[in-house]
Image 1: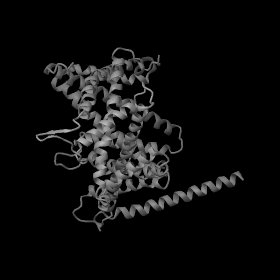
Image 2: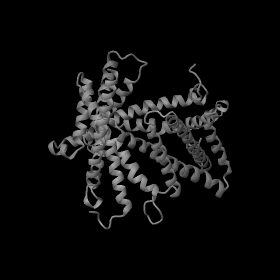
Image 3: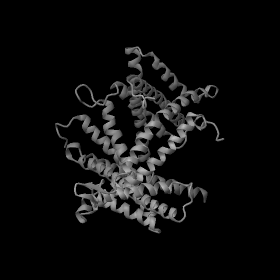
Image 4: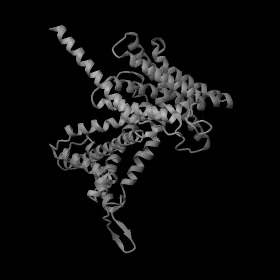
Length: 196
Length: 258
């Protein structure tokens, strides 16, 4: 309604309803948290191999929560210094997250070696596009072949964007159809029912 | 030798960050206790971080302050709906969770339709259906600049790409004859885009890798007490001891069986 009648009242209603959704979403964290605690408590109670790591997980979670509460949820204090919470975030969470995701660089490279065998024209296209993209995104690539950066940019701006656009249109039309089915009560799978 | 001016929290932080980074990289050898330690620390810290963020951003900012300071007690309704989600853990009242899900899905479905039509369908179509030739004062011209995403040649390629990829996913018509040619063009576009997306992802991971190595190099400095070298040596020793213990355990198992 707010989209078709952009009145301050309808906009305020939409803002309130959106906040309601965020609040409900926040409570959904309990679901994940309880599942995680159940899983690791079971491991500790049954003394399964590696149960100590579950203890480490709980300890880390507890320390982070306590640090967060003491810091009032702020990374920096009033003197712009790192709080305990901010320190744990900067020196433990950020390095762990960065390292975890950078590990994928090695595994992606080994997966590519196995998967990128140009057996068909399509696979060859994929291989060439990937190589061109990697070549063109590093200074050394552009130094060795001046056009590589431009080609990589062209692939991103034209080919990639046209494919993304087509997929976006297709997915959106599908989501609109599903939303209409939900509104009219034709689709009830989200309530845990079986497909009719 | 440690630098006099380096704060203690930065110094400890450098050692912690270096140790955790090295623990995770030990996975490149194989799964081992050091990696598991780092992995579980990561999960615990991330969950703790999410809890704090949610409590303060949602519980305090959107719920507690508006209710207590502004008297917006109607916010008890979404709080109750949120709590009802947890009813899933109690079989006798599990049905209560459906009310919350119905509200979330219903609201989402209602708000998403105009937004999707506006930004994901109409805007995308508007950008796709661009003029294929340019009208200037001297008449019609055709711009062949590949580097300009809005040039006529790129507009033409984009149009072909969008139409052919959409057709490839359109199964109501059998892909034969002309249809097959269009669908195959769509596959070509898809393959190039997937290859580019793969290459882009690899480079972003490489960027993260460089970032971590950058930190390891920085923390190898004397002002930090060379944590990179010290902890690397320690990690190697622990890993070597673990491998030795594993082999011993394996040998004793084989001997027991024989």
